[in-house]
Amino acid sequence: MRIRFPILLIASMMLAASPAAAQTPKRIQIGIEYAMPGLGKPFAELGVPAVKPYAEALMWGKMQKAKDAAIDFSFFDRVVHDYQDAGFEEIYISICTRCGWGNKGPKNLTPKDEHYPAFEAWVKAIVERYNLDKKNHMPGLKRSIRYWEVGTEYSSYQPEPTKEYLDMLRRSHKVIKAANPKAVVLHAAFLTTTVFKDHPKPAQYAQAFAAAPKRFMDKSLADIRAVLDHPEWFDAVNFHALGDPYEIEDNVAWLKWEMGQRKYSKPIFISDTTPTPFIAWGSATEPKSLFKGIVIPPATEADRERMAVYFKKLLDKDQTAIAWNHSFVASDMVKKCVIAAEQGVALINTSFMEDLFLFQLKLPLAPAGTGTSAWAGMADVKIDFKTEQRTILGKRPSFYAIKQLQAHLKGYENLQRVKIADERVRLYKWTQNKTPIWIAWLETGKLILPGDAVPKAKVKLKVPDGAYRIEPAIHDAAVKMGERIDVLSGIEIEVTPRPVYVIGTKR
Image 1: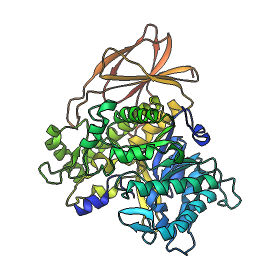
Image 2: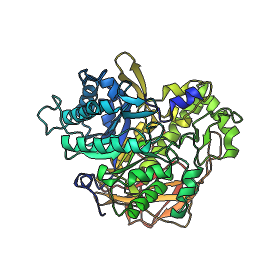
Image 3: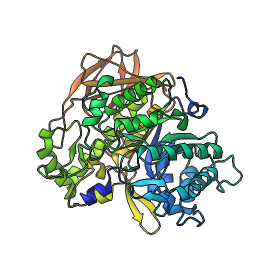
């Protein structure tokens, strides 16, 4: 499985939107990652439209073993068949350019000059094979694959110099559009975790980027702006949300500002997420280690000792701690999706379909090096490592929480945040088939771990007279529909950090 936090690090130490971009949906599309064979049918139960395969499973060097070797589509075909046959509408592809024989080097994943023709031929071949409009498409293909991201993340995953990445982006865009004019091409996603923790204004962006930890901020603001300077090479802008849910708001504001400075407007995608990790990119269990992890809001430096105790329990397979983590992930992903929808994001890929098993090991330099994410799987999964086939053994709270959210969001209209006097309360409202739905939760801005007192607040909603259902967002595997109540003069609900829905029942 491709790890969101670099494994090499641990081992070593309105104006110019293109026609294709205009085809992106007005409502958010929720996706799930990482799609591997065997999970299509069971995960179709979620009702979400999109999936994102594990990029390295489809990388150039794996599909083509040598310059003159035939391209092996077998694994790619398995993934596409699995998820399209299950009913998924969109398959989001991050084009993994890694290729031992074709790249300029381990820290430059662009093709060698003499291998650019082979690279371009590979890109053309995969786009055409999964384009229903082409005669030589995959047998049994049901829909064209539209979303193509050039690279996997604009960080250490694309370590090449910016100039060389831009040349690869330019060439790839040309090839993709020739193979599928309706394709939506995206640049490698920007990674900005912790940059916006203090909510900087535009005049402070340069300082905020410069202060971000260099452990994972391989690309500077100047590198990112060099990509944004070329909107002719991509149809949507793209970032990864690996911190707390609220960084989504700052990232969207920043990207809209950057686009406005350049006088264009394009859809915004979040092609990769993790649950809020609390601590990552280093040891979560050794607060005094030279390789101690980077603290992620709402955690602070003062929380290191408490987090160390918690993550040691997770590594020791403490079932109470693991169950709490599963519950936390369910709530956190719901928050990310609602905030992204309110911000007008076109697509968000939620994480993960299965655990990051490697990071459940007590790695010498970085135990629990991805924080909560290692235990974030939506399902218990058995893996046949020879065939990469997956079998689901059980479903977790986040599976049911995303299924519940998708059911309430499908076909939504007018999703917006509702400001109330208590600024700690996040309250959102939308309509579905003309019926109002609210979701609310309490945000204290402080780290809450198992055993901590759960903060609470009261919220009174002004609603039309009628029947409503108060439905907690699912945070355990037991599906509960909530209690129906008749309302004459308003609803008072108790909110905690776990979201709760209020739903009109006349749907």
